[in-house]
Image (cartoon, rainbow, N blue to C red; front, side):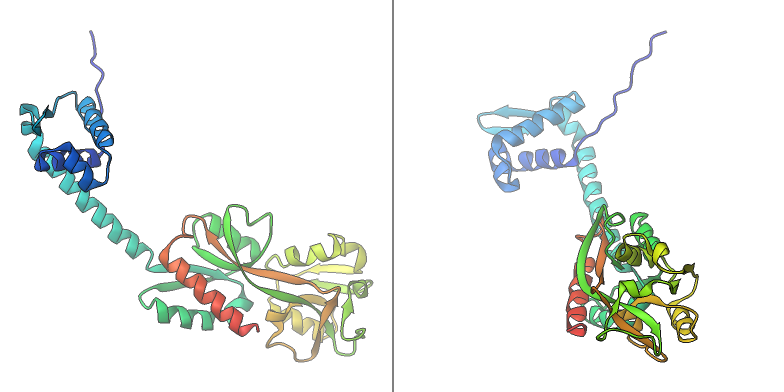
Length: 305
């Protein structure tokens, strides 16, 4: 028994729309001018469409073009197809617009406290119909959510290994500070990295070690008497330092409202974490994302002067 292989059509509705325009104008030249094609380009499209259907749809003559009998028979279906394609494109545009009306934003807790309220107030002014959904987390968590399309953008510290495949917009350098008990000596208002030698170091949670470890070339364990990994938030770390349970490193942004009972001293040599707006490559050209970038840059520049 012989089986006939089915032929599946993959017609481009633009070709059909162009053919209908040519028939309406009665001329390939006139249709090409109206649609922005070259005459040879439009002729190639018509030939390709006829080859796909296996039918001659147009009768060409010196006086122009008209539908062949086969073209006349298919005319109602071709019109329905182009109209359906136009409706589909319109509905897709509406769906894209509705989808972009929600912005999924991630940030560190310190960024959420210090920057985000002012940034969102500015963003609401320029994009009042966009709903912002916030997600607060640590370095690795936020990077992973961006790459898994769970977030559209996030304010994070720049980590070369994690930022691959993301669009990074610099916002500000956030100075790293030694967090010391009251009375702990600091030289000329700075604390040398060698000063952590022999001290118990309280490592902040949320992967903050990714910002700290490079300062010691990954050898903090060989300098401090003990590195205690914690699952504590920033305020708890500060409280433990205040009670003489160790020392730590946190950022200026974190310490902006937590200076009581501890010293927050610049490091020697100075060190920073580079805070950036990381954006999913799929969303970097989205209109609302571009608006949010402008708002974040403007607000942070103003706040950090």
